[in-house]
Length: 88
Image 1 (tube, rainbow, N blue to C red):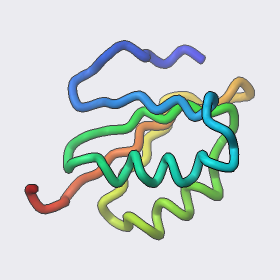
Image 2 (image 1 turned 90 degrees about the vertical axis):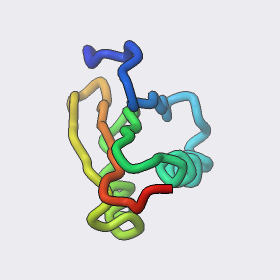
Image 3 (image 1 turned 60 degrees about the vertical axis):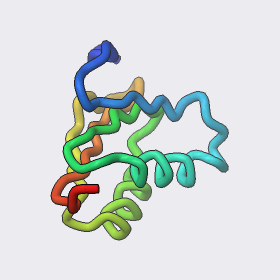
């Protein structure tokens, strides 16, 4: 994978490859739930998380943005963003 993992403002790296599969979805939901409007979670995984995407869209609706940075046989890098939430 070639996507940059260097720090960027309001981008938080979440590497799912080191998390046991049975804990991944709940960890991802928790991480996304902690984001504030305008922040991004750069998600790194060993496979394309298509079922997860459907679950995230159902849970976060129009507040979720999804942008693939890399998608291939080696895995994926996806930027998940949260937008349009009221200020905290």
